[in-house]
Length: 256
Image (cartoon, rainbow, N blue to C red):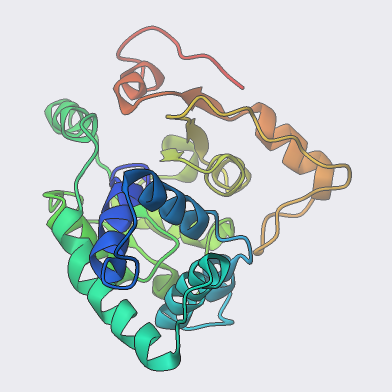
């Protein structure tokens, strides 16, 4: 089972392109470095608007607008309600045009198909939005997809992972879950009984577990100790090309 954004789909690139398309008329003097900074600020999402959308605090468009508003406020550029509404519309038109799969996705899916290994996706966004994204990226063959509206919870709640397992017809202990977020995808899937894999494309440091930390979102009981134990079980890869190792088709992968 796969996460989607930044795991199989290069969402950062698509969003960065869409930001330029939606914002160029507001920032006519921006150069390449300026746009990189714009995208970095937006994607950092300092106020956690996206996670708060997932938790039900905002609608999808509201979180989109709030994140844009924060960037324009930092740049000192006027961004009233009408401008925001148009920005969101322009962004949503432009983003699908740049949606692409990472280069290591199709070779892995080819290997899984050839080996008779079933697969699907579990995502922290709504089903139809992510279905369109997969299709735009040429990944129609990822036919099983669980979104936050499928079972009414988001990762790292066990139920969303377990629904993915049910739909591909396997027990949790038979399923590898691959995602780019160490805690939500890696630790969350392990605590749901799956084999968690952290896709660490950017060679990031392993996140430190704060004293007393535990996963929220309905994670399994046990608190910080269970979280630490799950973290120790998360495998780490730098590319999807390494997944064959975890499937027993090559040499063993390292662990966190």
